[in-house]
Image (cartoon, rainbow over all chains, first blue to last red; front, top):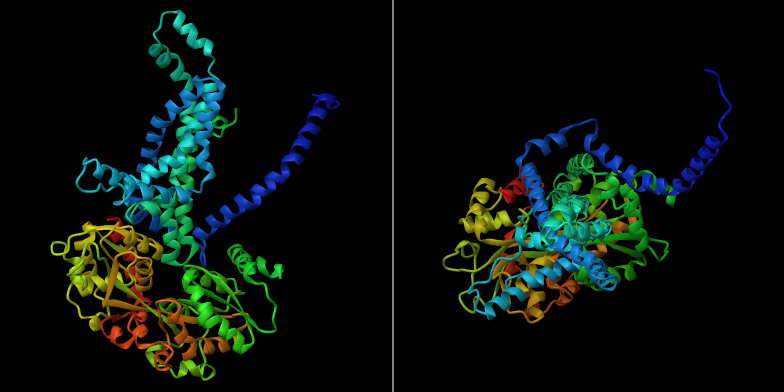
Length: 289
Length: 349
C-alpha cells in the first residue's frame, strides 16, 4: 500500500459535505438547544435529586396506578388509530381517485381544522356530546332515546374528539403514498380480467400499505402523548400518561417524579419507532417522499 | 438582569413571564402573585391599587393557577423573582416548614397582629375566605333540594347526576360529614373511613372536575344536577341567569393567605404591603367586587359591608357557624400528604 494523492473528485465531494454541514448547523443548534438539552435535563432530573436515585422509576414500575394509566393510554391510542384508519383510508382513496380540482378541495377540508385550536375543538365536542348537547337533544326530539346517552366525560368522548383531531395525520401520508401508485397497474389488472375489487385488494391495497403504516404510526404516537381531550372530555376517570406527568408535579412537588413518567413514555415511543423501522423506512413515516 | 437569570431553565421561563408584567419603574416595588381571572381583578380594585397608592409603591402583578410548583422552583434557584403570593393557606404552611417561605415578624404587621390567632400562622396571614359548597340545579330540585352531604350521598331520595372535585381536599371532609361526622369534629381526618364512603358514591359521579370554570360550566349547562363547587363560581353562574343555587350548610370553609417567598427581592416593601393588604377597610372592599369573604374578620365591623351583603358571604359569622373550617395544618402534615397521594389510586381503581 502506498499513500496516494487525494483524488480531486473526492476532495470536491468533501468540500460539498462541509458546505452542507455549515448550512444545516443553525438548524442543528436549534434542535440541540431546544430539544436535546431540555430532554437531557429532564432525564437527568428523573434520576438525580440530592444524589442519584431510582425512586421515581421504582414508583412508576411498582405502583399499579402507573400501569393502569399506561395500559389505558395504549388502549385508547390503538382504538383511535384503528378508527382513524377506517375513516381516513376512504377519504384518501377518494382524494386520489377524483380529478385534481376535487382532490384539492377534499384535502383542504381535511387540513382546515388545523387552523382551529385543539382546545376550541375539544370544547366544541363537549357542546355536541354532553347531556343537553346537540346530539342528545336531537335524538330525544326524534324519540329515539328517552334518557340522554353518556357520550362524554368518559373514554368514548375522549376517543371521538381525539380521532377528529388526529385524522389529518392519517389521511395525508395515505394520500401521499397513493399518489405514487401508477394508475397503469390498475389498468393492467383490469386488462388481465380482474374485477375492480380484485385489483384493489391484490394490487392497490398492498402498494398503499407503507402509507397505512406511516399514518398509523403518526396517529398512534401522537395519541400516546395527548393531554387536552382526556383532561376536558374524560370526566376525570380517563387518566392518560400525559396527565400523570402533570399530576406528579403537583403531588410530589419535584420535576423528577414527573420526568420519570415522561422518560418511560419517550422510550416506549422510540421502541415503537424502532419496531416500525424494521418493516418500513423511517423516511416514509416522517413524510419524506 | 439577564445574566442573573441563567441559574435554571425553569427559573428562566418564570423570569420571562414575570418580565412581561414589569413595566413601571419606581423607587419601591414588589411583585404580587395571585390566581388571575375575576378574582384578581376584584383584588386589584379593592386592595392592590389602594394599597399601592397609600404606600407609594408599585405593585407588579403576575398570576398562576397553582403557585406551589413555581414557589418551589423559584426559591430553589436561590433568586426568587416574586415577593408576595396569594395561595391556599396550606401551601404557605408547607412552604414555611420546607424553608421556602419567610417567617413573619408580626410587630411589623400590626393589622395582622390584631387578627384572631386562627387567622394567621408564623408564615402567613389569611387574605380571603371561600367555601366548597353543595350546589344544585333548581330545575331538577324546585323544592326539597339536597341540603347536606348525606343528601348528596342519598341517590334514591335525590336521583340525578353528580360531580365532585378531582381532589381530596374538601372532598374527604364532605365524605366524612355524609357519614355522620360533625363539622367541628372532622380533624384529624379518618382517611380510611372517608375513602370507604367515597367508594359508595363513586359509581354515581358523572364528572370529577379539575377547574373551577369546569364546575361552573357543568352546572350551567345542566350536565349535572348537583355538585361540590366553590360558592363564588355558583353565584356567578346564578347571576348570569342559570337556575342554580347552593347551601352553606356543611360547606367547607377554606382560605387563601398571603405569604412572602424566602429571599424575596423586596422583602421590606413586601412586609409593608402585607400589613396594608389586610387592613380592615381594604379587606371590607373585596366582597363588594366578588363573592368571597374578607380574610380579616374586623372588616365586618367597618360598616363597609352592608348586612344583606354580609349574609351572602362564606365567612360571615352565621354562615361560618354552619360550616366546617378547613384545617390546613392537618393537610400539610404527613397524614394529609399521604391522603393526597392515595387519591390518585382511588381515582383509577
